[in-house]
Image: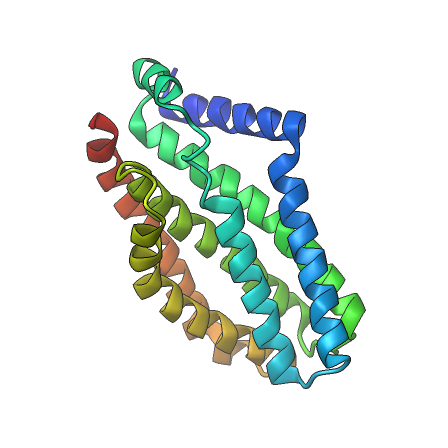
Length: 219
């Protein structure tokens, strides 16, 4: 099989395994819905700035919970079995694709629950949707790469936090600025710089993953 076929097979495998157990997705959905409910009980109503910040905080921690176990659930024997069948690039790409799909689903549910609960008017819904989609892809690519590195270091959670921090903070700043522009309904041309930065972060992260993961995979 070529790399694309290997990626499709691995993504399908992850989807089937998750569909059979549903433990991870149900736990994450419970976290998202309960967090939105707690925020509503605590604040009742919030202004635009707080609404936007709370949404990305919820999405950030949901992505950490969803993606941090990407490689933890893979046993050593299973990884050795993959090593004999597929290329390391196919493994890391399949994880990024699967986690992106998972994050898009979680983001859509979180955005729906959050919008219904707080009922904050979005000035440019299309631009805000683009911001949420780009944020989902960015979180998926960054945390998948870091999860792969920490898994090869004995699943050290401290290492994952340290490696994620320098990338996640600038990412959150750009995402909050882009989504804030969408909330206030500013002209879309003003947000083109933030969109290009997010696309660049995704391209750089995925490229680094493809270059670095094969060396980690050999160990």
